[in-house]
Length: 92
Image (cartoon, rainbow, N blue to C red; front, top):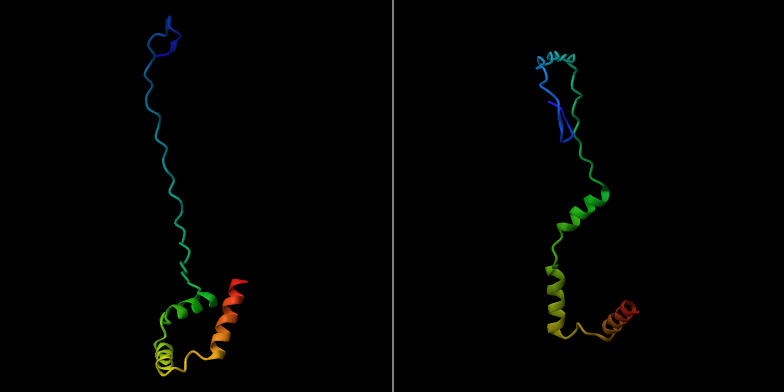
């Protein structure tokens, strides 16, 4: 039925049979490409992985520093000068 504006309504329409279904053509089977999964890890990523295995606290250095502090040999004038120079370099 077609409606043309508020005053005119077209009469009944014939019922058409359904369209003929299209026969789907099956494509010829194609050989699937071989799947070749590969993972390349860059040298930087390998180095980062090795760095993550290093502990955050090096216990041997801590033990050496504690022993030097306990014996009074840790804070020498040379070490204090180096520490002060590094601090000033970092601030400037």
